[in-house]
Image (cartoon, rainbow, N blue to C red; front, side, top):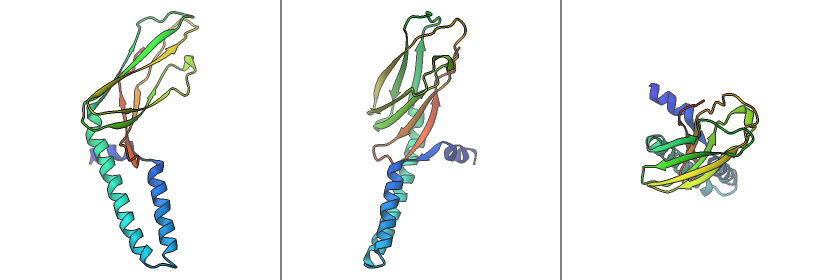
Amino acid sequence: MKALVLFFRRFFLLPNFFLGLGLICLLFSAGIFFPILVDLGWVLLFVLLSLTLIEGGMAWIYHRKMAARRVVADRLSNGDPNEVLIFLNNRSAIPWKLTVEDESPYAFQLRNLRFKLLLKGHQGKKLRYVVHPTKRGVYSFGRINILLTSVLGLAGYKQQDGQAID
């Protein structure tokens, strides 16, 4: 039961699902004039819901095979550019569309730190961005959020990876 609750907390629907649902509603509406379209609408609704559940289930099963790790220097140089690397590794054979959001420290003011990429099966990628610290102190990096979707883009799963570091 606990796993099911966790699944529905991290499961989300994407715009392609709602686009398909809207087109099915149009079919039902047109079924007033052409009754055969109502039957077609029911079939397509069943197919859409089935594909969405299969895609969400696959993302839930395979999210454990996706790994992310952040590499940042122990000490950042004030006023100089400092490189932050995120290593992604897909250990499954299925290609995934990823949206990676890094929780960078608030002091850097990096609000739209989002990477979108396609990670093929058994492939790894390196993401890079640069920060410019201006004050002395401890900078706390949060976790790495990965939004996992398949190529269809009907449903996805949110995974948090990487350790929060100071």
